[in-house]
Length: 503
Image 1: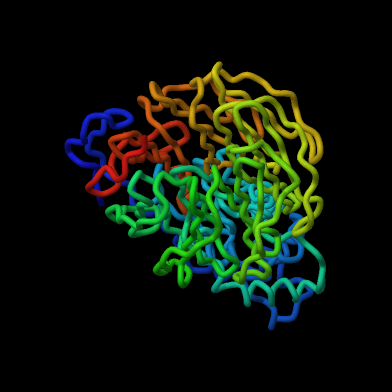
Image 2: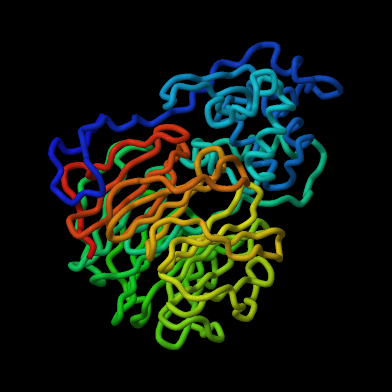
């Protein structure tokens, strides 16, 4: 257990009182019941040699709609979660107090819409898992997936999928969604631990969780570009890569092994205004950077491999704030905003070429982009009269801009709760606020106070799905974390120091 400092310095985003840090929830698989396969119907018409627990997950997963790579991933996740036992339940280390149920261990707190009768029914549980995972493309609600624990079951899962008799059937692979860029960025290592980077006047600082969903290390200074904008993305093999740009230089560093130590800084290009990074459907990282003549991009020529030269994108807003997101079909989309214009660029096919820049609205201060549980993108932009909102109404069409209120000229961030609802965070010099979807794919709540003022905000999801928010001001970088649907810890330091201050 850890706690925030007993007396934080003045200027924290809100009062920081000692508060125990949540321990890491751990999925526990209960022993298999002897009647498992008979109850699931797998033995009917099957050879006894194939009467494995994974066959049940394969059968009901296929009936739910999982296909191809998505089916293999679904079986592997269920094996990691419950050993493919439809009667499995777990209450240990869940916070808030709750029960994980059935094949895919669907939690009764975050998914109260799935009743016990459904959760402990193999087919109904599979149907719910299909919906929650957006058809097998988004496994972020499952902590075993986020920690990579499903990987040890992939061979067994492939064998079970093959025994169904649908070899080579196409299906979606899990999507890797971009992490938000900014002066503070955070992403999970391959083992599920969050890592966070903050760019101060003296360079970039780094801290990391010492256990999944748990305590934090002290901040360590890394040097690198001072006052930089940062981006972070995972390589295909799970190694994180971090990018830092300021007005005169662009550098990057990367993990030498998944969840391992980091390289030294290496040159990545010349200076610019902002950067964002995302992962193509084939696992190659693609990086965008803005400057005085628009946006340029650079991409890996193979997964985990070398890099192309910088290439122009055909324009884009000069010196713009840049964010990336991924459509449900795996295409990357880029959004760029400066004080006078907002434009949008997108891949014309997964891993493919790019469209021309499209007009997306007027100018503003900052932006954040996220995705609904059904895959539709949501865009928020701040300006002098608050925060505005625009969202996809289909794969190719958008709503008009709609006002939401909120802090004027604020820095923005967003993340999804474990149940798939998008939450939005905004901070300016006087206040911090947040709002959230009132249901999955639904409209948003009114803005509520989230702390006092600051200079930057960033949000990321723990391996168990709970959101962790980082807020910065000139005195340091702080955090608070989700403890329930609408309950949060207090603001506090990471370990024993306030970290870098951001003006």
